[in-house]
Length: 629
Image (tube, rainbow, N blue to C red; front, side, top):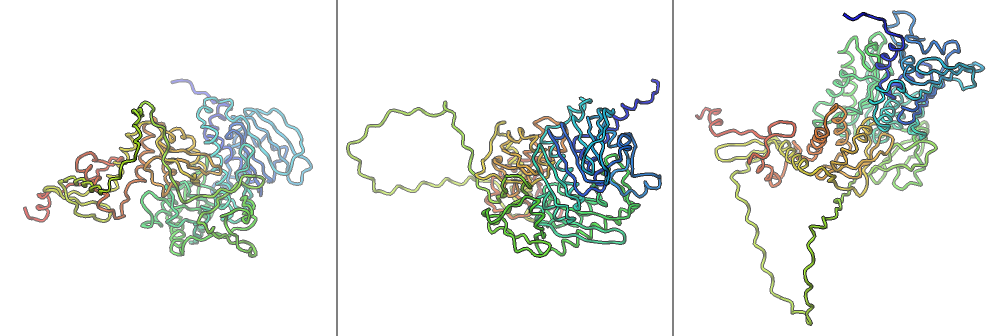
């Protein structure tokens, strides 16, 4: 057996960095959590080149004492735990004392900090975790940490980073979660010198949601409240009609900490049972407050997973909070948005913007927001100091077919010119006979009807066929899309459609822009987690473009490393599924004719997911079932 040696401190730090610091968004999460724990009321996050070149977090918290700044970058150094008993009731976001050491080991750091009431601050610089300089400096109260050249000394890690747009999207998601989990803190996010987000910090969750997620998110929410014993649930959920194509718009917080929890997901979705279409997921923004000793946050280094002492009680509290909101639903309601929130979100003077939202006279504390008469709405726009005008979301889609020049070699050459007659011939006044109508093709099957608005019943010979119309039509569309050559085949939109998706979804879509372009999509980054659709594949259903993009992004995100053809098939599956005849809605028998022909001829046997599309019951099977045989 090889000899056993103790790791060097530097190697141990690099391994710890791999657990805590996966990408620039991880750095932002750890540094902003320290700012929250320091009592900050204002936090600014700045990044450059997706965070690989620079991540800078500035806060107005309590600051760090000059004699403690070097200790702060040692492994397992923390100001948040003193005794082992405190592990049973952790009330801070950070507590392990690993983050700063891990970040410092793979970057170049400059720390500037000044305690409240101190005459001067201190500046500390480190490179790969090694101190380079420390000196007094004039700096505002609070702390600023600049992390430069992330992973510069671990090139193997650098090659796993995605492009700047994808990394920036992940950072935007981390900042959004911070803003939503702590609406009492004013959060500002700047990407490559451009301000992308600025929340007012007025303590109101709806204000943070309006600024961080846009008015489209905020306008259709229902308030959810519930208290069961020591567990209190508060926040907002969507109406069933506002459900999305994936779970990326579900936000859960435990005592102000963003978490991922299948238990809470199940509680929410159980409350929506029998209210949503298959493949649709509710939107929610829920904070669960419970005693610190009733939840264990010391499960994973990233602190995204937790364990509950009483899972049943937490499940019930969330379920009844959501259920109560749905039972009280009177239709989507506008959240009261304060004027300070509108200013922070960059809303401009509506009198100067035709079709903009109309603001009612301000009441003490808030003003009501009414929908524009046009039926459209303006979403979150860039905040103070930017000149970009608000962007209308256009719900009406006007299409035009892609214009393609024909192959010149296939254009017939003109024949000889006809002589011009000296006198126009007399017009033939005899009416032309009506063309003979084409005889209808003879079919060997008879349409019987439709069961449960889902299954087509057809009789042929001595058999009765039940056909799943959605599955069969989905397969037909998939085969049609897949048979097209690998070149863009889309339809241009006269007006681009702006889809509000979360930052990570936008990043995944833009990262795979070349693949989507080959399939007929044309997408642009519209900022703030939005994507502009300028073209879509032929046959794509445009009733829910945002849901289609979210579903596509979900498959691209979770599919792992696969060849391009497999990823292409996944996207075509989604497009075909969205465009196919919907189960649960009655169809005209005429539109089912081609579908039945292809199924009974054997051309369509299985849906793209492998499920059979038809079931045959023979006369003998039916007779035996009724004891007639």
